[in-house]
Length: 263
Image 1 (cartoon, rainbow, N blue to C red):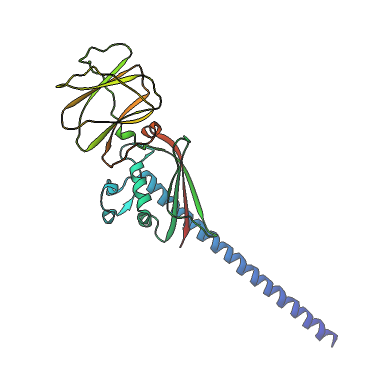
Image 2: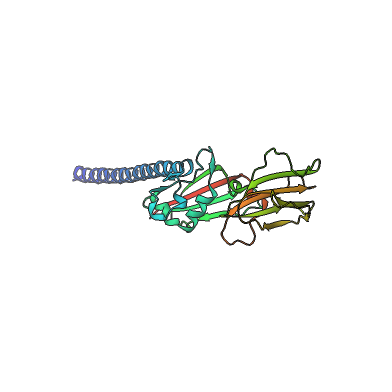
């Protein structure tokens, strides 16, 4: 009887050990499955993030086309390594559903933080919530509106302006509105054409001034006493009364954060 009791007790103990071991194995397998799943999703989404940032998308100019023509979005500026496109970001902000073509079965939120605090962050997509959120951070350069700046080139001023003057010319495009944008209020400028010379100096003020340039032909801008602190920009006609600050017309370093969670 004592032997039988000891045997039964041992059997119970062994059964408990086997049960606990099996449960521990199940827990371990579950943890391994979760780690594998997490590693798989992280690797998959990291690849999608790199494609989004480092390619211009398909087609390359998808941001200028109807949304239905976009096979997948990319935000890189073609031919400029490490530079992302402000125009493509703005398209994604207005059509965040396009991100589903790059991140299938995932919620995505993109936040661009310019290091220059005079430029507002750009937020794309709804807030990402849940227990499983993957966060990717990249350092990038954003072109903002720098492509719309009219670059100054070496030219001989027909009015003979010399020291303390910066003179430039460009051909007017009817599809653009032209602005003189300044961060300060020193100096003056003259606008004239080959067929209509002018000596009227207009005082520069801080902010933006829309230049009344219409028709065709070459226009001269003569900047007096203001150095390089003035930008001439030709922006697509969109009815804006006041373009952004001068900072927007330079390529700016930014921190890009992409948050992703499964549906």
